[in-house]
Amino acid sequence: NWKMGDFTQLEIARIRELVGERALVLGAVSGGVDSTVGAALMREAIGDRFKAILIDTGCMRLNECETVKINLGKHLGINLTVVEAGELFMSRLAGVSDPEKKRKIIGSTFIDLFEKEAIRIEKEAENTPNSGKVEFFLQGTLYPDVIESLSFRGPSATIKTHHNVGGLPERMMNGQGLRLIEPLRLLFKDEVRAIGRQLGIHESLVNRHPFPGPGIAIRILGDVTKERVEIARKADNIFITKIKEAGLYDQISQAFAGLDTNRSVGVFGDQRVWGYIVILRAVRTKDFMSADIFDFDTSFLKDVSRTICNQVEGVARVVYDLTSKPPGTIELE
Ligand code: XMP
Image (cartoon, rainbow, N blue to C red; front, side):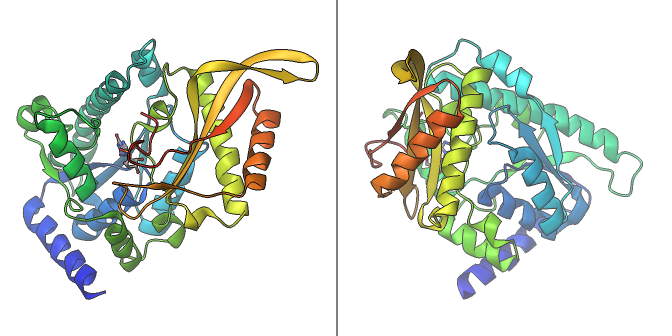
């Protein structure tokens, strides 16, 4: 693919020129294809002066942080720093159920942690051959994010605040003089994947379903509590494992299990229970701007439902979301 090959070389050259000989670049990596490709480009362009961190929000998928750290080390030679911040996110989100408020809190907590990390990284680099100031911040923004955020800035109603677009506040940009690097800003997802393959990124990473920065927090409607996150995480793991076992993973663009706000009555043995409602979502899309639901066989969904109810304590009901985008968004919030 000539177009993508040219893009990669040009982008690496552009990054080198922009960053110069000394500056350090901080990048938040999530393990998704966008941030992984962004990180691979940075690594290719400036080597160890690119510093990758992963913020553990406490709202990541099961074993996510460990897996991402191993994959980035093994496939890209990137030494990822995992910043444990689950308690901080949980305490700031306590009692907040409004989707936009949740997103804003998560976004500003990310920024607080990036600032702290920038200071730590500069200190750590002192007296090494790579000493320098953190002058840039990598974001894996894609073209569809840019478009959705433009409508957010306009007079019409917000679609939703993407925490990775225009998300850096004045104090970080002007106060610390940080500049953004967004190497994927003009690309669609399939183009990012093509570049990922070209950079030699493993197929299992390139084909990974996207996972939003705010994580499970925007997949559980209403309050974010440790218990609710844990239930959604276990249900999600069962759903995704079953999808993989059925050989359906690559036919689906994005799938996950979330939680409804309310509970529902169920019956286990001869006991009535007042349990959680798991919402399964699976979509097919090319560009993530519009999407169709995935047509599972009913027998597959029945099996997933039975397994979740049997294995995840506290769940009384499992539903499959039949809403395309539009009118529904892919995430639940
Ligand atoms: P929606 O829910 O807007 O999602 O239809 C479209 C795509 O964007 C992802 N998404 C996000 N990714 N930070 C991210 O990094 C966010 O705040 C965010 N919100 C949505 C979503 O997973 C889907 O792939």
